[in-house]
Length: 271
Image 1 (tube, rainbow, N blue to C red):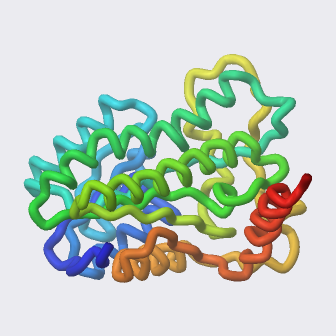
Image 2 (image 1 turned 135 degrees about the horizontal axis):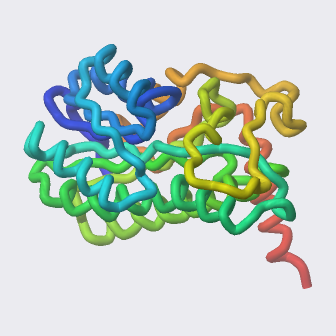
């Protein structure tokens, strides 16, 4: 599919837009001339971010379908249509699979996978109804393309986001829709995702998830460059202009993907 086209005067929605990658994407889209609506669960950070970049703020918990529906209503009331939806909100505590409770799984999947599903369910019909067409950008992770020890619940959700987005792109192309899809797979980006547990509410019993400085984990400790959120925003804009399915921030991690795919290909050759 051809790229997104002109940004000027069109409308974008960015979830998780109060900080980190979401805010960087929102800031960059504003610089490209778009009307931007940012959604986030943190009302204080949300209002500050919106004031900084001149965006509309809509407090939203993406794990709740009613709140995503309210977000869409706010977007249509303010701007009349939507052209770009960035399903970016996510959480990232660590925990070994054997230590996770069902409540841990439920929370992680509700935000990181169901948040994207809710965004797609609500906004895809609006994008298809837009005569100019539109685009969906779903934030996965390099952890959505190959596993990371200690991040099993996160990886499970992000693999789901990857499969969802790749299938969406196939179906949109098959339908001849004027809507495209991009999968954002950031490597190590300096964000607040290591403090996600502050957003977990209503949990009486401790689980197996905990905030962690990911840079101290063995997988991330050596050699991999940590980049600013602006690099992820640049990858998104580049993918939109090119009409690309994948937006990658860390080409240095190609060998990680080659190892996984090589093991898969080798399995096909076994007798």
